[in-house]
Image 1 (cartoon, helix red, strand yellow):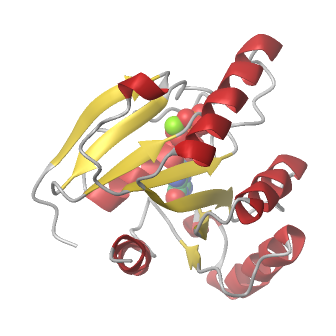
Image 2 (cartoon, rainbow, N blue to C red):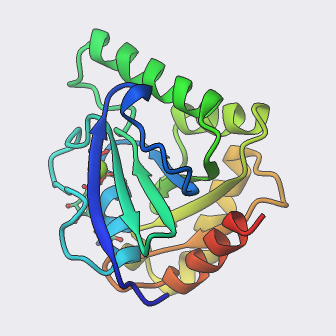
Length: 195
Ligand code: GTP
Ligand code: MG
């Protein structure tokens, strides 16, 4: 995918702030620090448009990025970060739930998992929830550069197993570091937004 335009639009905390131009949206959920913002940067070939950090919990709103006047990436706050207060966690949860249940332009949810680790209970809940609401989902196993090639299959298999993944859901092994999986993920996205 050739990127001709990419810009940050808004950090939204409530639905009134979501864009109203009805472009399709691709949202990213996953544990804190798994690499959601880095994945967006790699997809759009910008070094640091989506704010990343080695400190977990950096993304705290729904951050909208508009790409090629064609699609939005919507970066969620990561879940499972212990230092976030209980009140804030409940607020994130509600914001994300409202978005997922009501957001008509949402065409595809990326569930981002660190390919080195088994999915957590939160990941399993999130995936089950997406399936329950019938939201088209792609599982993205990122940080693939951190595991040896000989173990890729084994890790992907373990992740699918733990999530009890629907065999119909695409799974992409990805690295924001090397660009591995970028073309494949763009194919999945283009397919999702053309339906
Ligand atoms: P929150 O916003 O806190 O939920 O985190 P996030 O999921 O957006 O993670 P972020 O993109 O900020 O990345 C967290 C850390 O992991 C950063 O130090 C990144 O450089 C690193 N990282 C992300 N993706 C990769 C990858 O594919 N490979 C490697 N080696 N490091 C990565
Ligand atoms: Mg982030």
